[in-house]
Length: 157
Image (cartoon, rainbow, N blue to C red; front, side, top):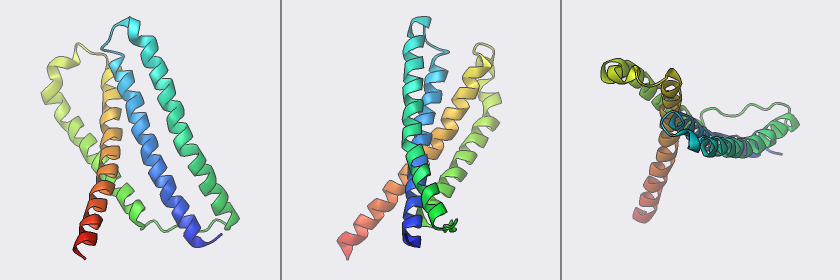
């Protein structure tokens, strides 16, 4: 196996991780929704959460196992953290942190009246949805935008 293969597998793992994060954002959104809907829908929400959690595992775990095996076969070869996919992943992390920070800062003045009516679990799950959703949205929007830019350059050239 070559270094190129290890790098490709690392990029695939980052893409799979972003997909898994999106699934987990949906898991936490169904958990938050559980605080707002009638008890009769709880089993449906729980089944949805279980299915999405299993899906996230099935998306991320095979890529992680392949990457770990490949790195072990290559003697723990170091992957380039400055790859394109790595930089997109890092930018998405920064966006998620920034969005989460601003939601926390603005939460008290904006939502002060609602805090007394909803349980803390709702807000924690909502914050996870916002953070993980911001990461996923940033990651996939950056990939899409960059691909559109590449397509435009191909048409011009």
